[in-house]
Length: 287
Image (cartoon, rainbow, N blue to C red; front, side, top):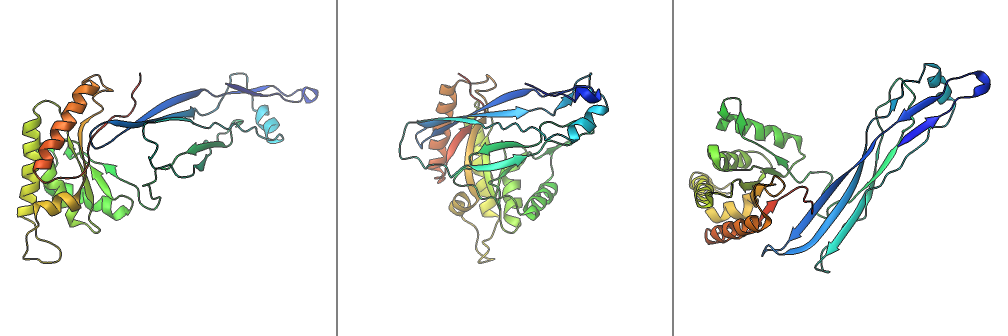
């Protein structure tokens, strides 16, 4: 897309051309029920505009020419296509308009305001974001429990997040993050993960053992002499458990393999007392 502002030929001013490249990013969200059956899909086409750059024919006189004229505005709105398999789904809240102004430059700026419409999830509260991802590693390998606790303390102090997502069970990260999440105020919930589809039994066993160890070594807030139960940990501290991460996107697994793994993990965790969501996360799925 090319936008041009021509100067007044009577004053012998040079022409100014500003070029911006528009691209689109497609986001696809697939909603499944407790039995891993698809209930709806949602496709969002989100336009992105790169920063405007003057062409080589621009001169310093073009800046003074643009300052005397009204800037042009380009408005791009994302296109949303949603396919429903269940008409009883919760309707999204009313779209909220966000205004994004590109950084100013010393050259002529034609694109001044870009209005973007975004759909806010019904469970989203602006005063506290749903969650943040966390990887308990550093240059030495596994991050120490004290460093993990320090990281969670910093996350809690922001007051922005209610949940922390981790992706695997190595480095005893389930146990260490449970302890770190329970030590801050208000306590943070965890979004746990089974990272690999291979050797599911071993990963499930590690996850369950870490939860049991945490419960056996932690007292309740109401009674310092009463141990926390495993059921309380499942119900109060674990928000969701994910199986794999964008494996279909990366060509590492088929949808059927991922669904089979999700069902297997869910069945195993149900036997251990966990009744919360078990799912798999994928960003962009293209047909």
